[in-house]
Each structure stands twice: as C-alpha cells, then as structure tokens.
Image (spheres, rainbow, N blue to C red):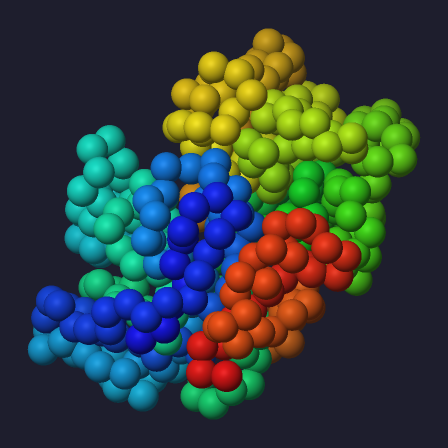
Length: 380
C-alpha cells in the first residue's frame, strides 16, 4: 500500500510499504478515506523529536472498516468510523477511569503511558497517512459514524483536533459566562475557541499573528488578537478592563515563536500566567516533549521549560495538561456535528491526494497564507 513515510528533517515521501493487516483477533483494518496533517506532525517534520526514519505518519484518521479479526464483535465490515488518535486497551486502570490517552498496556517504551498512530515515542504503531490502517482493540477504540459521505470534513476532526480543543477548555475549568484566552490559532486553538463558545463562554480571545488563522477565529465568533501588532496580554487586559480572563488555553507548545521569529518555549505559558486572573485556570494541550534535540538551551533539550511558576503560584492559578482522551468526548462532538451545532470543518483549506502529501507538509509548515488545515484523501 502507499503511505507517507518520514525520511528526515523537512522530508516526507509517499512510498510503498507492507499492507496493513489483521494481526490479532481484536484488530480491524480501516480503508482510509480522509487523513489529516496535524500541527503536532510538524514537530517531527522539523526534526524536533526522536521519531525514527521510515515511520509511517498520521494520527488523524477516518474511513471504512475493511476487515475484522475473529474477536471483533461490535464493529462490522463496511462501518464508517472515526479513529481516535489514542490507542487504548480498554481494560487498564487509566482506561477504566476514562483516561485512554494514558493507557498503561499499549506502549512498550519504558516510562511512557499512552500510545498513538504514527508518532514519536507513542509506540510501534504505523500511522494512517496511508491507504489502510491497522486498529488494535477495534471494538473499544472505533467510533461509528453515519453511513455515506456527509460531514466528512467535520467528522475527520473527531480523531484529534476537535476533542483536543475541547479538552483544553475542560482542563481550564471553564464554566458558562467565563472569558477565555486561547493562545495559538492553529487547528487545535481554533477548535478550543469553537468549543468554548459552544460551552457558553462569554468571550473568547484568540492570539496569533497569521491573518488567515485569525480570520477563521472571527468566523467562529471569537475576538482575534494579533500579537505582531502589540503585546497580546496588554490587548486582552484593555478589553477586559484590567481584570484579565477567567480561563486560558495553551495551543502552541514548545516551539513557540515571538513576532520576529525567535523561539521561546516558555513564552505562551508566561503570557497565560499574566493574562488569566487570580484563581483562574489554564489548560495546556500544546505539545511539550520530554526531549527536544533542536532546543536552544540545555534545559529545554531535556524538556525543562522555565516558565513563571512563582507568579503562577502567587496568583493561585490551576493548570491541567496532557493529551486528550478522545473517547471521553468524541461521541458527543459527533452528535453536535450531526445536529448542526458544531462546524469544525470550517478550518479546512486544502484537500489533496496522498501523493501530494510532501507539498501539503511543506506549505503547512511554512505557514503559507491560506494553508490552515490540510486533508489527504488516499483513494483520490
């Protein structure tokens, strides 16, 4: 089958790889109809992770079940499904408590709980930027979708970015009527803004410097804040009459850059500590890795990010972090889409055949104007 393979920094290639197949009785194989390039894929693409050459990439996947193992009883061949990026066993303590993003049974790497498709440190699993994908524990992991092709661009967000944005808002502790500051208007940040507004936020401020992304934030009903024109904290403080926001969401991660392009991994955390009021909450869903070979200083290379913890403590703020347990939210988000309450597919800018994945990666990574979310269609 054809698949997108990592070949080193700034290099991916579409190559022939062994076909995905049923390997265990609880497996299924999904024929991929849509698979997305995620902002977190760019950490690997940029050479800022420990991903190995030859890895098949892609953790945002959906499609149609092609085959099932003998132990699969719920999922059937022909089912249209969303594939959560988390791979979970369904029986460990964390899974039973709803934390499928930290399954203790599926990742053989020492010290790592949780697994994912096609991602550094997340286990030996191939990704879904391919024609087919093997799904372990298929009965537990797969989310059934309405048959057909309706809502394809909305449903493809259910594997990661929509639940992750929702999770960031949940981690922040938001309740209806809160003001929320979202830093980062990439796909996850936009989904966090969309989620906060669905959940009843009074106002959502979205901070970025890319005009196309800020335009999408406004389409969702958020207030764009361009940090290239003035300090974003000062802009939000002015609009909140000096109070700051009740909640904040970090949707940037460890490759945060200032308006001149210099990298500061602590920058967004520091700004959130400043802009969120005393006793407010912060949800961190931007990626921070335990190691970063391309970091500017030795501490950051070991995942040590020196943010303003003293002020964070003094203000009595709370912070939640970590990858989203997609299954905690994806059924409800699917139904919000079907009901017309959620429209995450608005962020899609480009739909490409699998063969054009290198072009998609390059333009998305370079922040070329208008390249806000790239979908790949292996069967196109």
